[in-house]
Every structure is written in structure tokens, then in C-alpha cells.
Length: 311
Image 1: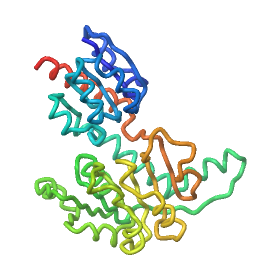
Image 2: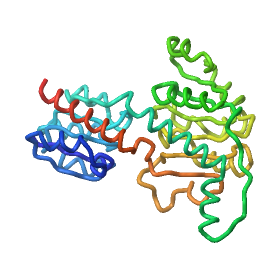
Image 3: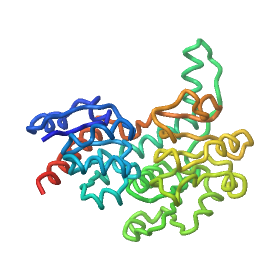
């Protein structure tokens, strides 16, 4: 059985997931993703299965895999937007992911970004390292209103944590999980996304990238619907925002800050337009990259692969 593994956090983090992987009688090749279509097309036919990150599994790649040995794509992670699911179904390629596993690490990362920005940690660290004792004035997050767009596993965990920190929490989703909302009645659920835009001091995005959510945060939203100069946080997908509109919103003081762990193109390009802009913080897609979470995701993605290969 020949397997390809491309996720870098799996490869870079020690733990039990390596023990489980190495205990399989597999011939394993490693690439460092995200891997583009041009790299996958000439090699994908050689593999029975892939443990993948955000690689480019287009219809062409999946078809080429099917013409060879490919049977399974096991996504290390949650989002499947980089896999053509219709093509996978058409060609009989099994696809799995590991939902409900990132929420602690990613929700903590959202709060880490928020605390960093609100308390000027990034600025004060750099100034002190340069020998300065100039002191900035920060802001408290207690009492501020957090708007969560997308009340899935991460959004729910963030809502619980933010409420415990004294924030007021609003949430929007196209699906209403009444059982969860009954248990956490302090979370104010709305069916109108404009409520989030108009009433929240902080807006955090927790959505997959689809045709419907592409550039959800755009010029129209920023110039006509944001009322409180919010901080926008994006740990989901880079394509949920229009970067040109976000930069304009910051410069025109319609947005206080943009804090993100994801970009439209990753790894970061030399000409990334969000770089070097005041009040923008970028981290390199590390929200889920904790020892605990990498190990859990890794183990689950291997078990998913084993189960589908044995079907």
C-alpha cells in the first residue's frame, strides 16, 4: 500500500500519530503542502491513499488518481473546500475529514489574537526589544460585544470562552442549534447577519469558503453595514474577505483592525498586499497547530484512512 502524506504540521510535530503511522505496513512518501495541481497530476496515480492538508484536489487530479491506484483522500483537518467533492463522488474516491477536533486550539488562537491587538502586545514587544519604554494605551475586552459568524464547533467553543471572559456574545448561522443555545442562553443568536455587522465590537469568522461566502466581508459591508469600527478576526479561510476592501476600511477608520491566521494564497507571497499595513496582524495558519491538536488530528486522519482502505 503506497501512501502520500503532505500536511506539514503532522510532519513537524512529534507524537503518537507518528507511532501509529509507522506501525502500518505502508510505503510512505512525504511532500510539504499545500501541494498544487501541477505537482499532484504526474504522481497521484501512484498512491492508494493520501493524508492531505489544503492541497489542490481538482477534478483533473482526482481523475488522474482514479486512473491509477487512488482510493482515499483523508483530510487532516476540517475544511474540504480544496477538494472537488463532486468529482470524488463521480470517480468513487472516498473522502474523510476530522470535524469537531480543532475547536479548542483555534478558539484559543482567536482570543490570543484579540488580546495581542487590544493590549498592543505585538507593538510593545518590538519597542522594548529596541530599547524603548514608550507605553501604549490598550483596551479591555470585558464588556465588548463579540459577533460570531458561523456557529459550528469552533464558533461554539469561542462563544463559551468569550462569555467566560465577560464579553457579550452574538452569533449568526444559517442553522440554529437550539440544544446548544438552550444550554448557553447567554449567547444571543440572530438570523440576520446585519445584526452582527451593526452591533458588534469584534467580529470573528468561522465559515467554510464557498460561492456563497466568497468575499463575505467586502466593500459594501464595510462602508454601509459596520457601525462600531469593529476588530475583524479571520481564522477560517482567507477568501472570506476582500483584502483591498479591508485595507481601505482600516485606512478610513471603518475597521479598527484585521487579525488573521489565513490568507487567500498560502504560503505567503512576497507581494501579499496585507503585509506592512498598520493594525493588521497575520499569523501563518497556526491556529490548530498545537501539540495536543496535531496529535489528535493525526491519529484520527490515519484511522479514517485505514477504515476507508479496508472497506
